Each structure stands twice: as structure tokens, then as C-alpha cells.
Image 1 (cartoon, helix red, strand yellow):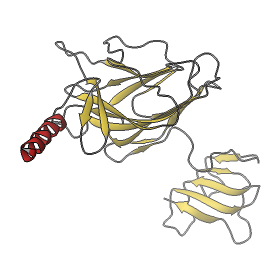
Image 2 (cartoon, one colour):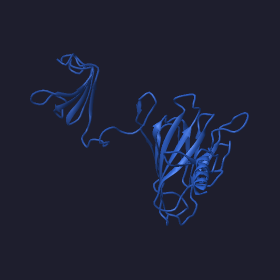
Image 3 (cartoon, rainbow, N blue to C red):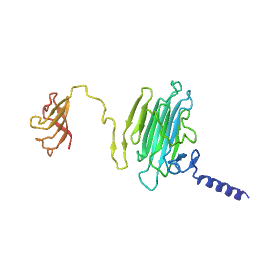
Image 4 (cartoon, rainbow, N blue to C red):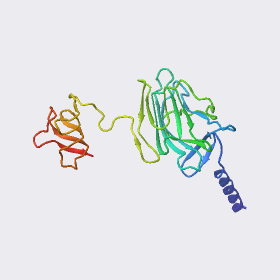
Length: 267
């Protein structure tokens, strides 16, 4: 009898684990506790749904949450799926029932499979492709949870009045200062798109100078400051007469310092 009882229990557990449930219920898999947000579209004419994933559930709440969102579009295509990591923070005494910070960034798949709409007290999302579903899971809650409850405001009406939105770029939102920054992304072909600066991201303190259209017979255009310069259309260099170069060892007047300008990078 005991063995029959154990066998029955195992069958019940297996049935539960193999059931793919719809919005607001647990989706069992081997990677974690994913929850079904809902389908990508409704019935005919198959209009795409918008979902309010996050919101301020209480003015006195503290949020310090990391949430992952997986958009699983049509599985018949390799580029209609993407997974995003969302960070949201809010101090319990922040006035106006708003967030303090929010970040959205694609961590796997196609960053262009979802559209995000950011409000200072909510985050809406929509799949950009039909014939699939959206899922989320909480990676960590170091305070209260900002997650909305099922059916997550499911609607075919696009949200309005948002402070920032994005289709492919990530977003970094500073609600304290009303600043919203686009974060870099890599598409499915390996192309990197950067909306900000590359490098240290600071402007030089010294004056920049430019010369165009034949810089003393050595280049077609020249931009230089103190110690560094950029040249286009090099004519008298041994580096295969490259068309673009970043130089150091440059005097403040644009001439080469002792030993001549040295190419740090050239094409």
C-alpha cells in the first residue's frame, strides 16, 4: 500500500510540473519560477497586448528588486525571442508615490522583440511579435514587491503620458532628476549600438582646434588638442598611407612633438 501511495504522489507532482498554465500562474521549468504574464496577442484580429508589469503598490514601500522578463514570440523564427533584466528602486519616503530609479536591459536574444513604456510609477511592456507569450520571474526582492497583479492591466490600448520608451536600446531612468539614458545593445547579427560615449566619457579641458581641406599637404582634415590629434586623409606616412588615424605626441599647435606624431590607431 505504501508503494502505491508514493507512486500516486509522484504522478500528481509530474502532472503539475508538465502543465503549462496561462497568465498569473506558475510555469514550471528547470530554470526557475517563471510566471505567465499573458499571451502576446488577443483573438482575431490578433492585436498585440500591452501589460503593466510594475507599479508603485504603496507610497510607503521600499523597492530594491531585480526582475527578469522573457518575451517568447513566434518560435518558428530565431529572432522573435528576448530576455530582459529589470532593476527598480524606491525609497519608502520618496514623495509623490514614484520610483527613484529603474533600469531595463536585454540580456539574451533579440533586444527588439519588446517595447517598453516608462512612467515614474509604472512600467508597461508589449511584445513586438505575435504567436507567443510573455513570462517573468523575480530574481531578488530586497524590500517590497513592485509587481502588478494578474491580469496585469492587459489591454490593446497603447499607454500614453510615459516619460521614456524604447524598442531596442536599454533604459536607465533617474526619476529624482528626470533624466533618462539609452543603454547600448547588441542586435541578433552582432552589431553593437551605442547611444552614449565610448571611453572615459569626459570632454577635454583644453581647447580643440580643427583644420580642413589640405592641412599643410599632410592631411585633408585635422582635429587636435593638447598631446592628441585625429587626422583624416594622411598622405605622407608609412602606415600604408592610412585614411584615418588617432595620434599622440602632438604639440598644442597641432605639430608633431619631438620624434613626430605617433599613431595609436589607424585605418
